[in-house]
Length: 174
Image (cartoon, rainbow, N blue to C red):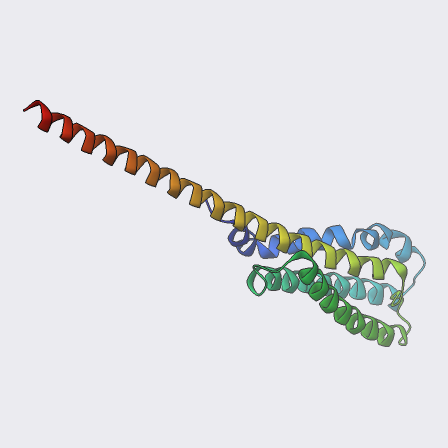
């Protein structure tokens, strides 16, 4: 059976996609109402910016999960959270600046909205938890394999002891 981090790495696009849908669900749910209030070119702009937001979060989550699994395999939770928060904050600044630029062209973007800030926090915590759970799972697997190795060594030493006892018993009988 593969370890958790190998499983997640193999399925990273799918895990990232599911996480992205989870995070931007408020935007998905509000699309029909927002489309009702825009007309003409605003419709295409709103949809294209929604696709941009979706792809931005999908890429960000993929990068953060990959970073958590590959670059911080043994990091403590606090250290992992601080790094993810820093990367999420930088990503938020990048996203907000692009959103602000797009909003200046007349397209509704909610560049500084509270939902957007919340989504970046959720992204940070979600990627932190996935990385931390992967580390805990790997440690548990290492402990289990060590226990199995010790069991095998114990059984081997018992078998050797019984074999030696049998040899001594037969040598005394002769």
